[in-house]
Length: 323
Image 1: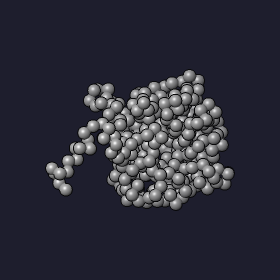
Image 2 (image 1 turned 180 degrees about the vertical axis):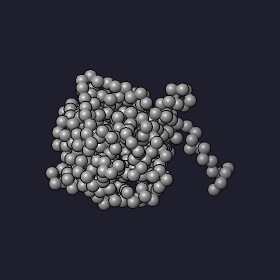
Image 3 (image 1 turned 45 degrees about the vertical axis):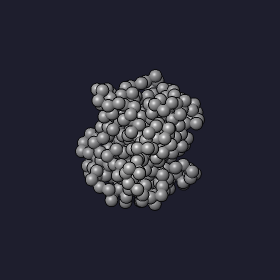
Image 4 (image 1 turned 135 degrees about the vertical axis):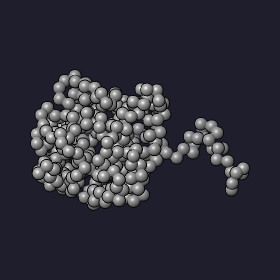
């Protein structure tokens, strides 16, 4: 039937009916808050390009997790800033690496907090790339050894999930095989499966001190123009044992999220990355947008596109918005 018999505005007339027919809802259970761990005590270094975010020493990181838990945010994703870096990133796999220490402290003080550890090398290498450099580029296969060692270190510390973000070929299979061989058969892997070589990562590189000292990451992260390639990457990660696949960034890649949802029967995460966060903060600070409304709209769009899980720096403030 057509107008005037059919009037779609009838179901928009009051808040009650709008909520009743609401198709997409973002819950706190959907959200993961990224956090940055650094050595020291009582250290709270502001990340200038990401207002409201900090590099936190483990003691303050624990307090932040307590606050997040009290607000209803039950999952965090950890990144680490080491005291010293090396050529391969193996410093990130040491028993007392900053992330391993943070995992132990959080799980002891906030046992209900679900702790996910990012696995990569860019924070830990002197050159800022995601693996071992051979002949001017990241060597894929030797980097797999470092990544697997990180996974075991984090597993021994008590992590709930590992999340390889490096985009090396075969890394999910290598990590799965290594975890299983050490008895960690129940530890899930959330793979950064379609991670694009994006300009939206700029503020994160300030936060994690991970900017490459030469070149860029185009030889291992994906071309932003490619969609079919993303499906191949995701399919390979599933075959290698990924339990969750991720699309990163989120907002410029909503089509990839939707295509992934339509193609694969697997939980999907999306990373609402630092550049996306910082643009909202800058616009809100200038009075150009209503921050609460735009944050809700962005997270809803990511969920509507098909993401089951959203990694976002807005998680804590979103908890305040919906209380």
